[in-house]
Length: 82
Image (cartoon, rainbow, N blue to C red; front, side, top):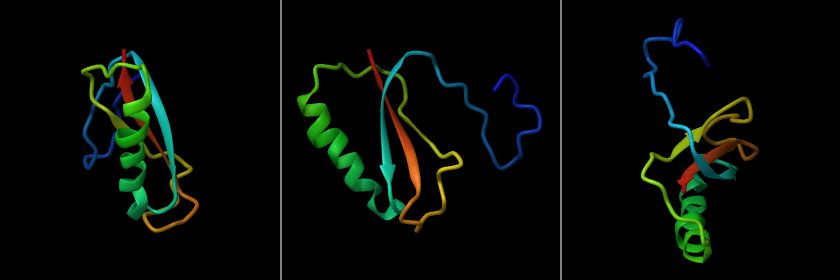
């Protein structure tokens, strides 16, 4: 996105810094999102040689997000790495 023009007032403008990210796709309802984060921080992070960067992590809700309770919803989780 090159501009925030036309962004609805309910949204906040945020520019994500460039860099490397480990990307995880959560599939299922958002009720089970804590399980995905538990895997990221309790399994992946403890076993990877990647180092965390100090940038913010973020979630991407695109056309694959079908609603809070939809079992086929997908959300990408971006974890900043060096």
